[in-house]
Image (cartoon, rainbow over all chains, first blue to last red; front, top):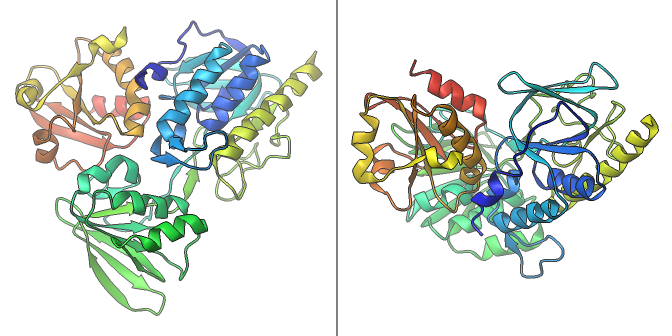
Length: 322
Length: 108
């Protein structure tokens, strides 16, 4: 099945009010959708594009239990979507511009185009997006050598020398993936050791096409019509220039929270949403699950788990209203 | 279905398409690109909404190397809005509908 089939969702007539709305269709949202649909809750999952979230940026998922051979990000999303749909998941493709939690009973969501929809209980699964370096040249050369997704853009760098900025799992896995196309991949990391999981590190260290520049950060990106060089600053104060044709920036994530009332949700300083062990936020009836939550581990597996927990908390809340 | 409104354009047809009377939004994509899949429904939505006013087109960069090269495209999805054959503006990444509507508005 072509993945475009999963894209449209079950487009149906939207009601004005639901018992439960799930905001976002990544692993947390799809898992919440599965639990909500299976519990026969009056629910709606809102996703702005095709479901999947950041998993769609992932070439290969090797640590999701139940798939011993591993599988592509595409395939996992498709399976999760199919699974929720088997229980008649209600999904709507639209964009939420503002979440209004000022009424503690009726949560109001403003949609692009001016419409609104409300709910008794809300699960926020809006996820996170790639961080930027915030250095000169980055914005200007975005899409012209500066990329935030190796899986997406690697084939444009056949036989070229590219840099990967970062030292976590995503950065190092993507560096390895890039060597399928690029002639050479230089990893630039601000510390002297990687944060990535050991097995990921082992693969990268064994890959002859990957080299490392330690204790260094990128201070600017330069090029006329595309990336030509990166200027680096090392911890000891020395500067250098690296000639590359691409720069893959993979330095963690920032929360997708522009539509959320951060003060009421008591967001922490980076904008992530604190939750308790039952995925409840500071607002009664509002849960959060997945990468939007304030937590240390951002994996597909715990996002999915939190989605399930959040629906159980929502059911308890809805019960308390009756 | 909305997807009928999206025009799939190739290298040979490209120039005449973007020089046509109405503005054209071109989505440069590939089947292996996740974010391209993610914005697929938004593109279909726009095609239905702007039917007769703005041409909404997709170009598969795997099958059509010439045009993406000409515009220096090295990341997908990249969306370029054209008017009278000229680039008005462009955006890269899995953006939302509101951002694409803003992009289209720049031709007004």
